[in-house]
Image 1 (cartoon, rainbow, N blue to C red):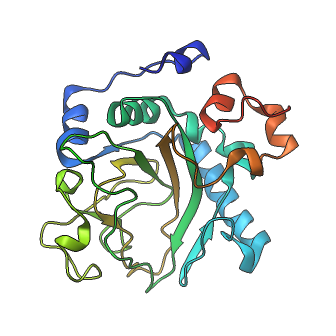
Image 2: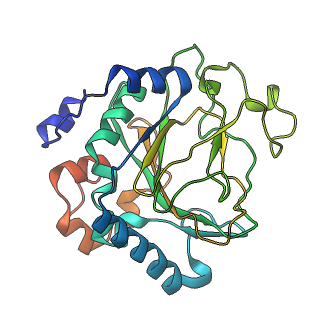
Length: 256
């Protein structure tokens, strides 16, 4: 474990052998009942309130997608999000995959509207030069609503983080269903964690209800962040950050 995390008050939550094996072999893990009901309600309210307030500018700090309610830079948009990127089981899983110090990559929101949401199969980072790593990115999906096949739960191809080469070397039509794909389903309040080299994508929401998620991604500390927290850090956010949060965000030398 990263000693810098421990020095700043991080409490290790050891993974079970089955959880470690899932991350290593399948490339993903679903942590159930991670979000208590009162926090879940607060996250849902914040998601909708921010999107309503920002309107057509919502998500523009990172990316906007047609047919998807997107949010970005959530670190600076409410204390309700503070515990997301500090969740102990999540950070333990991230270190297990990366095996070296890491930091937050970005914290965004994603909600495919009915009839929308399909993405091409992709990886957040290319395959490692050697099987088994080193890996560079770990992503997580915080399920604010139930994730089901009907509402387009994210699909992934188990074990694809260990397939050498680029995804385009193996998949001709990345919008089409893959014969080995599975959907990361789960009850609202669950969190799916997956290796950033795993082939995955959002899927079509065929329901008439929201499928809100937070995407909380981490990256090895030697790489730049998707959302540069030093550039975006607001004074109100800086004042409330703990030493552990400042380390995870990589803003320790920023003024409070």
